[in-house]
Length: 543
Image (cartoon, rainbow, N blue to C red):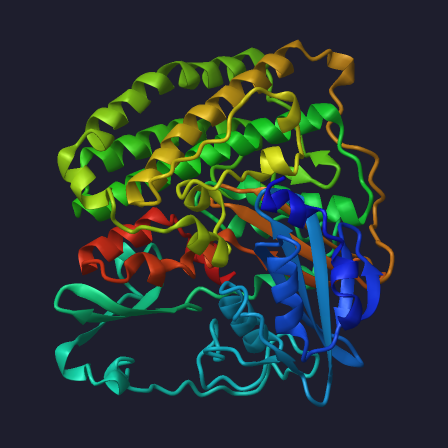
């Protein structure tokens, strides 16, 4: 029997028996409540002895009588095996032990929790703000935050982090971004170079922070939240974002989705995935080649073809707002034959376009020199930093929530999960190119089904109450396989028609946290390519 099989059979509650204060049952997973000074030991046992190698999400929240950190753990080989660890602290002393020594991805998780809610994590390697300036006063998601308080943002001179190691005279500190096209948005990289090689890298976020979680906490489940997700990953992947919220809200409110609507959801989501991957392909080649080449324009051409299809279906080119809780807002536009013809025309020309990309990119010797064995991310490192999606699959990690935690119409369709074991920039590009082909297979099967679906059975939405009020203190975390990876939503209900806590688990945020591992020792130009290979969107990183 393999070690994975042995750890999968371990009962976490038995494993932690001497450390558990009490147990809880969340709607999607069992959870245990532990003391704040036992976090590292609990996490070590769960990772080492129970096989929970994926810290999926950390939620920090404040109640009237306590602060609380909730860690949700999964296993990469079975994401349906979920387990929660709840760590309450007093309001007077919100200090909890850090999990970063066990799960490196907890570094950014806990920094965000400290920044926005105000929980401190003892033993954290670098506990400072991550989305707001260091001198910011207060924590915006705490109950006592004064949003009218004036803020003064101080400027501090950048210090060389290698100075204490006696290397200051050998190195050069440079700022890349936040206003630079190669950073894929307003991202600031503090880079220390040893000659032309990266000796140290610190990622500075928050330039596009828009309080999306707080906005959603102010909206109602049924009507006011759904338009927001389109604006997280705003580069054509909006329907995938909408599905993440829909899946969580439908789970906490026990809503069903008609089969016909599931087919429409699956088709539209895969069209969005192709759109996002074409944009990733074009901009990555832009980063590698350094100018607007034919590849970028070809990628925009094919992305535009898909956007026309999505515009016909949803009425919008980017901010789709197509999903509704319990289904979708409307059916295929009339005449239906025109929509199917438009979609099939695109699917017919796609194979030749993919061959064109291979001729231009993957067989190009210059491109191979710039990407093969560059930006290497080993599988264990990718798991340690919570990487998912094409970034993880480009490191040979066979994980995909569409297959491993089935939702929508995916279980009824014929398609394959794409992996590459090169672990480098080249492999991540190949995964996205091959995933476009798999998405096309899914879309073709969906339109075949939609064409033949009996007219009197085309149900778009289930019977959803006008006002949704999930049970008080109900908690759930649900995720979908977005274009960038695991996009998850945590919801906690207080019995009203708005969530008490709304947390977004961004795949871009976690994939970006591994950049310093990809860039270490690389030339600065290759660091830019490695950043591009992660395919981040800052609207989703900062939220």
